[in-house]
Image (tube, rainbow over all chains, first blue to last red; front, side, top):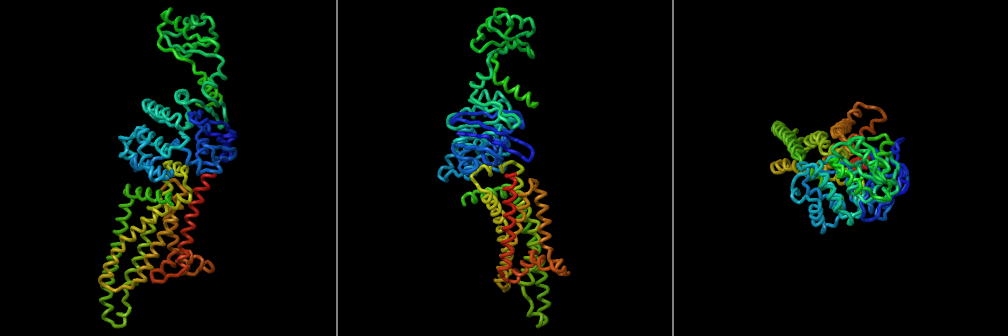
Length: 307
Length: 255
């Protein structure tokens, strides 16, 4: 549904995006992950027709972004990083205006506004001025305007930035609920957003592609080992030594009050680790899987000298 | 066409949902009303005196003595009003990031520029229509000629078309509304006084400057003269302003 080939964008001397190539299948949610200034926003602006690329190609819903910009614009719903809101309008009249300029046929405009008000959970706010609603609701209005013309593709630039944890959860649920109906590309610099919402990821840094693929593929190809992080009443060398004694364990490290236990991917030692914790009465507080992709991302980000 | 109309409606709503429309319209009417009142009282006194002398009595002309100076005063007020109507139009979209919504919608840059321009021109037309009420008194109690009055209003409309196009161009240059407004005022004032140089004689530039000055062309129209030369002047320069605004937006996106 989205295809990017060797995309490059230069601003004078500065190379914002360099030879980026990736693909997103229809009906999937894909994350564009990278630290700040990695070229995420630039890539999205090129896809949505806001900026032209210096070289390379991109197609959205089968239309070339450069040859058929109007067809692409009709197939894409876009939430820019700075939500484009007219603060003096009410939620409803703003959405009606967006429906007009996105060329929703007149007979269907009312229904389109009602539909997005419903799916973005904005029904009770529809008569309020946008300047008077909370930040979380403004973000919802932003997502609602992106969906107003029922586009095949949604491009969301940092959809949860600046929200409080409860709002972040709500927005993520909203996005997850759109899976299947829309193909979604969302950008973020927060890894959990990708692991919680997305099916796949494109990792970029300094305008270059670092890795891309479905989350499972990436985890499998980059992580030969599997593992868990356990948080105990006490995490010292003593406890670490106990885990080191488990058969099959390859590596045990104490990092920041947590113990990291790793083993080869062809087996699963989670039960063994849990049994040991209980038998020895180590006071389990938390146990979670090591996200393979997290390591990858941290390595990429560290290499880039960011964060 | 429906795209442009959507934008016009949005801009008009923006004018009237903020204090801009009310403040600008009422301030404009207050000033025009004051000028009209003082011109009419002066005209009454003057025509009373002139009626004493049969020679001067021939020369009493309400078009020349009230409408023409009133229209000239209105263009000077317009120098201050036009930037207020245009400074927001493109600068604010850029500043608040809403331009990203417009430019990623299936709208052309031309439609965006025209929609915004048309909205400002509608505001100006509305203001002109409201001032026409004053003239009703003159037509009811005197016998002014209709033709110079009509060409005078056409001239005012065209002057607005020119000034607003210039204002829109400056609004496209910056995201700072004050900068846009100030550059517009400076340019319009220059246009207004360019012919001052010509009266003191500045050689070969004389005819060029006098052609550029809008006062020359506007003066014709308040005297009831409808010359294609004047129409061409207004339409060319208004069109040029819109073309520049269009080019600025295009080039910014391709940079």
